[in-house]
Amino acid sequence: MRSQVEKAKDLEEKLSKGKSALIDLKKETQNKKDQKLSYSEIEELFKTADISTAQNELKKIQQELETATSEYDRERLKEKQAILEVLKEQLTVEQSLKAINGSVDKLGLDQSVIDKEKKRAELNPEEKAIYDFEQQQKKKQEEFEKEKKRMEREMEIYKFFQDQKFASSAEVQKLISDENLKNYSLEEQELILKLGRERIQLEQQKEEKIRLEEDVHKKFNQLSNDTTNLQIKNLGKLKNEYRNLIAQIETALAKQAQLRGGRGFAIGGFTGSGYNSEIAGVVHKNERVAPAWMTSKFADTFNQLEKIRTRGFAQG
Image (cartoon, rainbow, N blue to C red; front, side, top):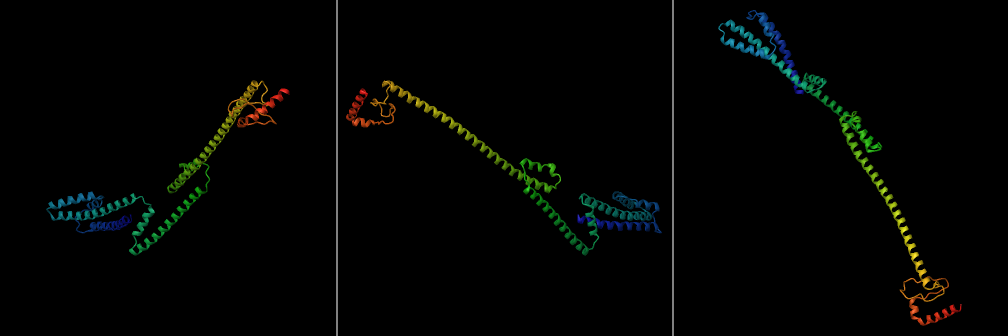
């Protein structure tokens, strides 16, 4: 852009000098004593407004020069040719200047930037060096202030996400909605979205942990309830088994009592043949019970004791 502005400046100076030269040429031509062209012809020539018209006229004059027979006509054509050549050069400068200004406009630069470059183009080399140094320092300072402001703004955003207590990931999602982001710059929006998404992920992990803990607690309570119910159920089953066992014992005792004439073993006597582990009856206080091996080994002794017992019962 700088080279374009400098070139435009050079063309403007050239154009300005060319206009002055045209004015002088017009006056000189009109005031020439031996002028071959009329005043109206001169005026018409200087009204030429574009290069193509000037080029066409020059071609026409060249053709007429080749066919001219008189010296007077040749002089008139050469005067026209000289004026058109100067006009053509001036129009070429104008066209170049217009093209450069158009290319600068397409850059979409602020007018103040263009004005600065035009001002620079007017300086001599030494002044340009000083001007460029000052502009560089000014630009560095502006960039420093801009970067400082950006970093301060980012720190505010970081601090907000660090200190803010969110109730849920949905609350964070609401914070980074388009409605809330519209008041921030694009750079700030990108930072907020980045931090927001990280915070959403963190909040979702916390929520998932809470859900898992609640699920574990619920399952533990369910297991405890199931265990208690099972224990109660098993306890009821054991009670029923105990009842059945007691009933069986009572039934067996009742049958033994019937077989022994209803007397049982309260007055002593042989319990009958069978397995050593088989239940034959109950014992009472102040009685003694001899195991099977003793009754077998000391059979004579127990027979004597049995005789004494039965005699005593017959007498009692």
